[in-house]
Amino acid sequence: MVIKLLSSLVKVFKDCALENDEISFISLLRNERVSVQVALCASNECEISLSVTGFPGKTNIFRVYDVPVNLACNENADDYYLRKEPGSYPDILTVCNEKEKICPDGWYSFWIELSANNFEAGIFDVQINISDGKNDYSKDLKVEIIDALLPKTEFVYTNWYHCDGISDYYNVPVFSEEFWRINRNFIRNAVNHGMNCILTPLFTPPLDTAVGGERLTVQLVDVKKRGSKYLFNFSNLKKWIDMCRECGTEFFEMSHLFTQWGALHAPKIIAQDKKGREKKIFGWQTRTGSKEYDSFILQLGQKLVPFLEKEGIKENCFFHVSDEPSYEHFAIYKKRSELINKAFPGFKTIDALSDIDFYKSGAVKQPIPETGRAENFYGVVPDLWVYYCCGQGKRFLSNRFISMPSQRTRVLGYQLYKYDAKGFLQWGHNFYNSALSLKQINPFEITDADGHFPAGDAFIVYPGENGVPLSSLRLKVFYDALRDYRALKLLESQIGRDKTLDLLEEGLDSPLSFTNYPHSDNWHIKTREKINGTIKNNLKKSGS
Image 1: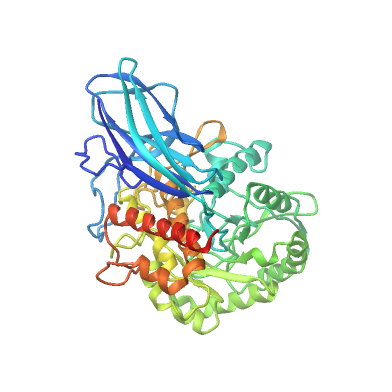
Image 2: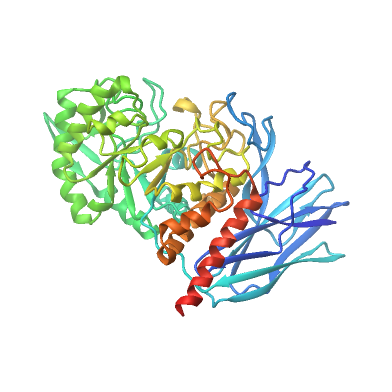
């Protein structure tokens, strides 16, 4: 059996040559968790067991499974991909069983996650043990726990959460007890991987839906229509807020109050009449500027604002107008934005859009440009947010497609620090539909929204058995990017921002940017170890 100890940035394909350098040392702070991989290639079919000894914290071991990839990238993709052809790609992580079957058909990978759990600082000789029942193998790893803590971050990270994906895949009614139980599992896992803001479906989110089409109704606000007046019940909304807070969510992002790509229509809204019958009162039939819908929004604001204030989340609450409007929709968007600001005074309004004129005209207070156009907003917009989606697969922009090197995903943490970003948005935490939501898909079989988005764009977790999500290695690597960001913030508190940036860019031929960075696992890992080492040395100097 051939065994290699690899960094978490390697994606192990069964048929790869696997010429990556092995690792022998890794460091982490006392409230961090880090990952390494063990790759195995056996000459005979066997059952193996894995264990970790010598590490004082908590250890989790996962097996890495492949998923089918049909659309690996778009036609205009650059060349920083692992592969561009259809095939089987490593992505799913499942908790390792006591015995795992290995066949003599190539490389297998196991993901080992080490959590310091606030254990005391020190250097530990860790052994990763593998046994096939006949032979015992071991790989040595020195692990240093540094006597420092990542700071709590005010950085906001939202990866749009889709409740219909839960209800559809598990076939559970919306707002049933099973619905709440499974969502709690998924949200807790998301928070555990750095997501501190959640898309909250006041009404069914009008996102990625074909004109005239519908997604499963998920509406937290109960509405009763009485002539031109509306009565609102926020019981389910309160239950949602309480559940999310229990899971660790800090920020709430209210679903869009107009349709995607231009604010041309109202979202689907269901209301009860006097006889208790449910009816769709707004939707694709409702054109923007509808006086009836404007009145509905204003009446909603009169009741929702004091509710959110009472819940104590006003400062951590965001509203949306429309997702990704283009400049041709500017006049419509500006009027709809004015309505939302009037209905929800004092609340933050954010939207993903990449034309700086929306901001300069005052049409949006917090624009969120895509990373490829963020340079136009940097230094102009305070508290910069950025986003990426299916379009950021060229010009070497960071993204999380399954076909991309993990380093391309993780480098975002360094980039967010460089641009002093305060927030990041991505649209698909668990979008288990085809593009435009024409049909539901099985994410274990279809990873590209039925051939429309590069595989991995639409979701970063898989729906596991019994309502428990399965993480992807991309989820783990993205969390590592957030850890890198926080480590830089800690270093900044010690030596200042200018010196921290100097350290981050030390040895580079040109400044780090969203499109320019070394395409190197070794550079990334050495840079993080350099950050950790500098943090440690400054602790010694300060005597803490």
